[in-house]
Length: 321
Image (cartoon, rainbow, N blue to C red; front, side, top):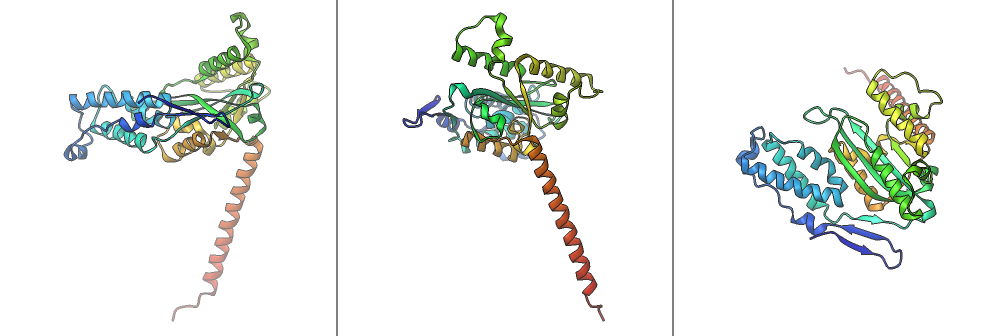
């Protein structure tokens, strides 16, 4: 029940999945009476079962099921004092693992000369029960045409959801760029790391508009009251200068890393859709903003028309005798 790989003989695309392994995971046994008392602490036996389920989900989510990463991470944070509620949430993750067991990761064909790295990074401030910040990121291989707003193939190569109060993902994508350069161009000296990093400028996507504006400002982007945020931005700026990182902004409803920080339906649906289609398109930032503004104006106009129509209806309504 390991990972199953398959290659299309015509397109040469490779897919892999762990359907059998996902369907083999069994939920924790909880009586109906205890399930109703979700606030009670879990027994020693139930905690042992929770550890086993988390281990299985951790392996599955790290290898082929990015859509389970946030649930698994949040479940692992329930220790050392786990409750019945934690058991129920772990069982929900097991049900999702089994329901979506057919989900596959696709490795599409991307010409070597067009190959680059893109990563999405997101953070949800104090959104866990312990009021900690949940971070998440997704790394993928893609085409350089990503920057021009084209619909391009992507290969989800790495991801993570975890509790961390600082900017995340920088070391991971740098390492991936170096591994890619060594695989394509051959060995290099550590003294030449900066030059190697610049061979394929990676793309970093965030849905934080203020962060994007700071990174793209000609000066220092204005003063920042939060020293920790200022340090994080300085680190990212250094990455831009060091390896030609291209920062991009996307609206929240297109942020696939949102599914690594929040256990909600819409972000997870977006992530699974991107995985199934193994394609992504990012429009120019100004185009997105213009579309949002046009949509806002249309909604305001319709609301105004409804108000006028309601006033007319009230005006012509005959008085009751």
